[in-house]
Image (cartoon, rainbow over all chains, first blue to last red):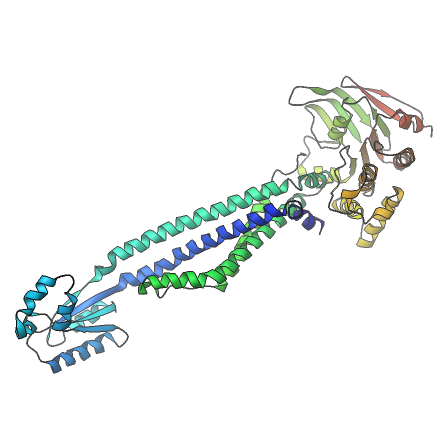
Length: 288
Length: 226
């Protein structure tokens, strides 16, 4: 009990410094956690994007509307109902090239009704499509040929891996900033009770007793920083994650841990505080 | 019990405070360390209390060379020593009772909680501090703080008491009470060393003296005459 009171001496002697530093530590821990979350969340999203592909099945040109419907149903049954499937007619094709290739569109329109026999009719299937499904689509009658775009998201995947690496480094750097700041605070704090530690040493107190005020001081500061970070996480993370998801539908499946992360922040910060507190106690007291 | 063999203490600036000091003190002996201000009395006591180490020579307590003793034995030795430093160094956030109680606890002595409480209260009574036992030490006067430091040392019933100017901040009445207490302590077989510059004290309670002159010690025997 005496040792705990000693550990809280800095809070009595210099409350402003303690409060300000603890708030800063809480903020640093929050951002460190955020980038760590980004690091671990990006991998499954990138993996999903990596598997994502568009398979285009082109129809034979000389077939009627009812045959087209049959092919679409056949493809849907092969890929399953959960996979997105879209049919592009010549009219839709012309509409799609309107902006990018206006001159080509004008030329095609001069063909009149013949345009239907010139322009390709195709079905696009997007999703995680195994090779066996692609082979099945190829074997459907009146499907002339099939193209896949496995590398469609290659630049995005590269960007994701870059963000992942950067997030990891930022997270580690912030963790070091957290530890260094905590250590610095605790070393300053120990000056408030180092005389008392000398008294303990002189009276024959053992190493643990000498270190306990430092451990308590570190654990309490760590706990408060973790609490601040956890509260920040609970109140701001839903907004941040919503903003991130709104950037792209590709990010719609990202993990959204809320209370578990807040809990871990408190536990880990308290443990780190205890360890840093122990280290900050080394060499305290001037007697041999 | 306490042996200093050819002990020299110099500080980093090269100033030699103690020069080839020899002292041998047996169980139950009482020694005054005399000398002017800056003569090295406190340094000598710091060496004996294991707070500092000698530059040269050997300091032995209970037969152990303090420079060679393993940490665990050093802690055990410290638990058998009651040191009253000149810089009182109380734990200011704690009450008078708690400061004294902590000393007993760190010495791993005193038995059960109730026994410890009784011992602390007895020590405080002896030093006329029982009425202030709940006071936070920050608000104590210099004399009161010094008496708390003495209570803190004697409560653990140490084998050796080392007191650096224990009456420096006391009025005469309290000074005599403290010296009587230390004198009674030595009569129970404990070894006591008191550094003082007050000749009145040494005249009243006559014991062996070690006078520091130019860093050297001259030992004089005196008769007990209370």
